[in-house]
Length: 160
Image 1 (cartoon, rainbow, N blue to C red):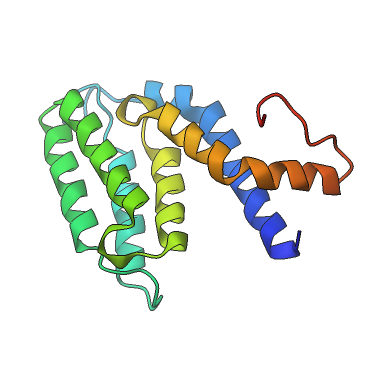
Image 2 (cartoon, rainbow, N blue to C red):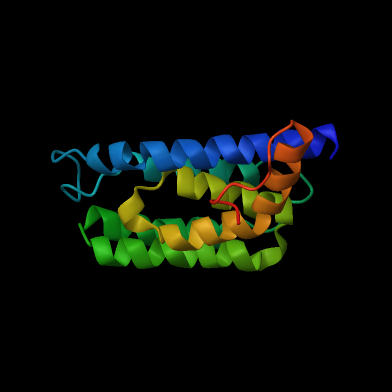
């Protein structure tokens, strides 16, 4: 396993671990004074800013980001109306788009946004089983190899 791959694996582990540990805190950080009382809106501008930064970057691999921004606007409208079920559906539609790499986005861009979406979005608005399944599918094989390289067993129950 080369250094770049180890770095990517370590980064994913940190992101997933942080997300899993901090998810209950983020979900409880809702502020009743915000529009959409109790749904929390602090995460959506962060996600939108990330998509915009990719959209306006010089990266040749980002593809067409406008449909992703449009989907986030739909989510924003539902969030401001306090429609939690529609926010959940909208965010999972956003993640569907990322998984399908719609509009010619690269694997790197799709994975980066998928991971970031899971990191910043409150747990009640994303399908956590879906993310963990994707993590297990894409990262677990590298995790086993990484653990073996650093002297671990590579056989933890989580990754089997």
